[in-house]
Image (tube, rainbow, N blue to C red; front, side):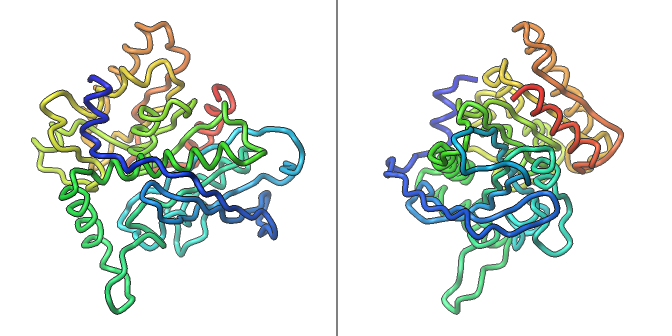
Amino acid sequence: MDRALLVRLLGEKPAKQETQTTYSLAPLKQENGYRYTEVSYQACDGEMVQALLLIPDGLDIATDEKHPVIIAHHQHGGRYDAGMLEPAGLCDNPANTFAITLVRAGFIVICPEQIGFGRRREKLADGQYMNGRDNERWLFIQYYLKNRTLLGKCLFDMECAMDMLEQLPFVDKERIGICGHSMGGLIAYWFGWYEKRIKAIASVCGFSSLALLQQRHLNHTFTMYLPGILKYGDTPDLLDGICPKPLYLTFGAEDRIFPVDASLDICRKAQSIYTQQEASDQCIAEVTEDGHVFTEEKQSRAAEFFRMLL
């Protein structure tokens, strides 16, 4: 699909504001094999938001050396309270903690928080957070009424996170990748397409054919939808614009929310596109015998993918 057309479908983008980056790396909180803290930055509508920053033990960020960074985007899973805390294992009963796998593999990891989750949920007049699903629907409508989209908001906020990362003195801005599972996999895929500064993408159980999901009456997170997109193509068509950027795509054959036939078609499409552009060594596309999960084996495979290609 035409890039300019897709960008228009994302909706109006707020005027660029001067990025205000504040961050503190002391005191760091120590965990097993890494330290973590928070970094604050200005999102696309001017609000200040936070992300978790994980730093491997043995990596000295006070020197002039630059280091690769992986953005670890959280999933949905109905865990509106968890947000950025889940990939870092800092919420109750985290479903997957792939940020820890990546930081223990030697990468600096940043876990941003999508609007509608964690601290970025809407509060009512009594100071209480809105019900998570109601909040997500309200946000979708709020942006729709302003000729914007929830997906566009998420990508434009992520663009601000990239601007912030480039200002951190220990970040190698030529070696920034993104990884995510489920909704995080969707954002990793879309943002990897949208943001040229992203150098490698790992998307786990992140998307499917919208046309097929509609045909089979399968609902998904509101972030997945753009008005009018099926007039011009479908989500898997972004692969043409991603290639030859290094890409790790993995799906589960037993995933109940993403039909396996579509997942197989997406993998074949990815392999064909990368082969045609003589970049087959830059693409891993697979359907494994599991479900809607980011297994420890796949987390290790993602870490190795970034080690090799980032």
